[in-house]
Image (cartoon, rainbow, N blue to C red; front, side, top):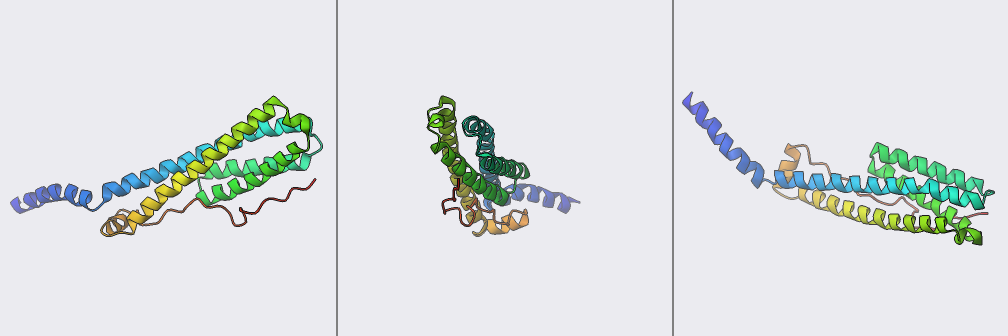
Length: 189
C-alpha cells in the first residue's frame, strides 16, 4: 500500500514537470492561436459578405440592366457565408476567391456609370470594402503565421511526441488562394 501511495505521489510530482517540459502547454497555446486566427478570418470574411448587399443595392439603383452581375455577386456572397458557417478553411478560401471575382465585375460596372462613381453612398461603401479587403489580408497572414508556428512545433523533437500523444499531431492547413486566383477575372458587358 505504501509503495502504491509513493508511486502516486511521484507521478503527481513528475506529471506536471513532464507535460511542461515536453511542450504540452506550448502546443496548447499555439493551437489556440491558430483557432483565434481562423476566427479572425471568419469575422473579416463575414464583414465583407455583410457589406456586399449595400454595395449591390447602390449599384442596382443606377445600373439596373446589369442583372447578371448582381446574381453572380449574390451567389458568391451566399457561398462565402455558407463557407464561413461551415468553418472549413479550404472552402472559405475558395469562396473568398469567388467573391473577389464577383466584386471585381461589380466594380467594373460602376466604372461605366459616372453618376454612380459620384454617389456618396457608393464611395463610402467602396472605401469600407477596401478597408475590409486589407483586414482580410491581415487576418490571412496572421492565420498562416500561427499555422506555421504550430506546424513547426509539432514536427520538432520532443514536442512531436507530445503532439501525437495528445492528438495534436496533425498539421493545420494554410489559408491559400485558389488556383487561378492570380489571374484577373474577365468582365463582359
